[in-house]
Length: 625
Image 1 (cartoon, rainbow, N blue to C red):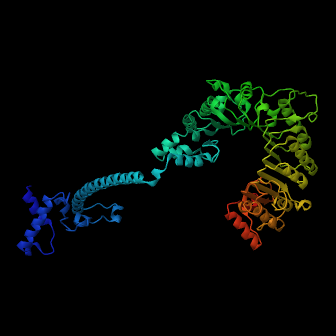
Image 2: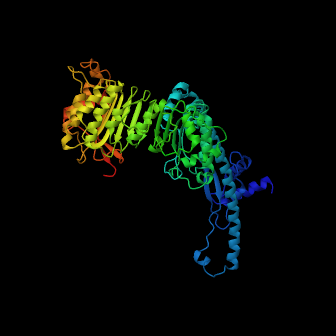
């Protein structure tokens, strides 16, 4: 069919409001011009052909869909063909010849309409896809331009390093891979930050210290964990490492190493063993039976050439020679925390721990005789097991920190009578199972005598006793002998016979303008009291006034005012806590207590606003809730 024929046919098929026979020649001519314009301008009215204008001969009805409101572009199709009744479809009836013929005619027209729909939709999809692509490209350009002009781009790299350091190093480990059975997720802060932008990535890759603290449970980890350990070891470069190697089962290996740890557990352990020469701090939670088999994984000589701090959470047998040889040769080792068995496994057997060079020791649950024998053997020139544990004095020249954490150190008086620690700066005594009152009363005077004998500049004191009754005289003597102390922590149990201890202690520590003050350099004071009472809402009246007086007398304003001669450092942290259970036994929720006297509450808030971290808390056990 020629173009003119198509146009004429199209004209005849376009419906008009008037009858075609009564239509004027001018109207018909206008219609012809319109159709010709549609036919000759496909860019303006794309895909509009005579097929779209075709109508059902029997009905003459159209479905008109506006595609563009601005140019009134429409999609026109035949839609009104009578549907077949559902009852007839579900019955056994057969269409008549006339019905069959009509159905075929309608089917042919509907299939043509369907093809037109599909063609039009495909065209529209292409247009939408193109617009979406252009939109995405535009959004990318906008994002890049905003990034280019952002004020944050002007930040010096030194500021970014401080931000990343605060964000990452505030965690104990920048890579923390817990047990696969744990609910915690893997922590990979430097890796997460490095994916934000190329600028951040460059800064983080140039800061190896952020990649050097790794904690991993090596019991059957995933392939991802192995890759993360490899990544962090590579990114840490040559800087010193802080490692925590754990085993969630407690180090009891009942299979050969490869089967027990799994493929990736062995791979991780091998990588960490090869990195031991760079390790500065090492925490071990894997048993000696694993260490006895780990030599098969080593591809190079291991050493503790950089090790300064060693913490062992499980016993490692004395016959694991390669490990104890490394400990003995660790010339930089200064701090050690070990279980009792590794202090002195059996009488007459010499451990290879270099006590003579240590500055800090944490004995966990040891016997008094074990502590004395260990200290005496490594700091004294002569030693004999035949001599009583308390008969010879122990002089430890280098020891700066002593931490006794035990339920069995019941003869502290003998221990402190037998040792002299001229370099000691920190002492922590923790007994949560309850020493007898007599033991405490005897221990504190012995501790005072030791400090006086040692002439040490003690800076940190922590006394945590679950037993009732701490002698005020003994504690005050310790403070008088420790004028350099900056941190004091006292934990005690309240009873009727000792009800005034807390108030008296606060009063003794309060600065007065006419007397020589205790602990003039005190910056941190924490007092924890176990009480039999129910939950509290207010600070107990027996300590409220003394607490405010103490805080005000040691505040920054007091230091520059009336008490300037007595106060050489302002108190930065003051915390008093009350609870029905020991904080070491259960988890707690902290509930701040208010003062039931208005003027005390106002003075307390003024101290907080001045910058002092002062709180009074009721620690409610989660068990109680």
